[in-house]
Length: 178
Image (cartoon, rainbow, N blue to C red; front, side, top):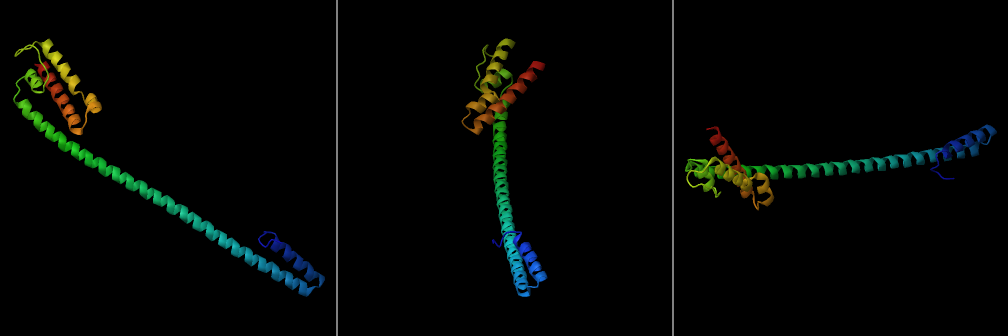
């Protein structure tokens, strides 16, 4: 029979016991030896299978660990890239703010600031509140951060639009309180 069949060794052992009981000593001894040989073979094959199973499990764990390491490295790369991009944006923002502060320093009124930023303000040197509000709205539309994000070709334009938007809004609110 098949030496790997799980019941073969037990069957041979029972056969050996029956032969021994029947007085067939040589047949019983041969049956016992064959039963023990099959048990040894099954044990060896079982341990070989368990070694293969353990090796396969170790391979799976190594593959999982490798994928986790790759994901971690990719995350670290993205984080480093994002941190670098954020630092670049901060430097750019500081440069844009410095430029706008210089422009603002020479502007006594909101109308002057809007003109310095290229926004048309009707009414000459003394625009009415309605003309100033109209120019302010044009500036907001021109420098709105959402619009700049969709049309800006580069980061500098986007940051410039955000900072101009903030400056114009603050200046308008400041003059509205007067």
